[in-house]
Length: 115
Image 1 (cartoon, rainbow, N blue to C red):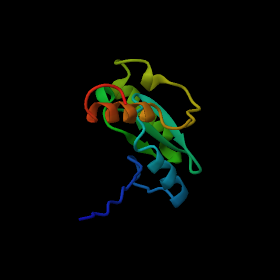
Image 2 (image 1 turned 90 degrees about the vertical axis):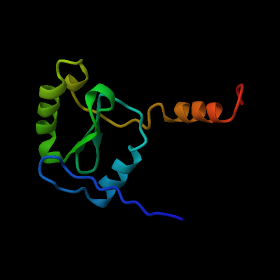
Image 3 (image 1 turned 60 degrees about the vertical axis):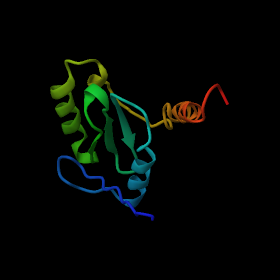
């Protein structure tokens, strides 16, 4: 049985949804293993906070509300570390850690010893 799933991205401040090209770029980041990092998403200048762990969930802001997202995160997590205070730009340079994590998972699931 196959189930179709659609991921819905919304700006956490105004509820705006991204256009098709920005949405595709946001989807590419879903499997990214970053934590405590901002990432810019073009072409609509969205900002993603890859929280995870002590920095909470991933959070999204449209180009008009980038500053509000940073202010909210600095207020909430600013005393936990330097991550919320990072200054831009925040380019996405491809997935971080994903290939290594997948290789480790394959090794662990395949039985004993390296493959």
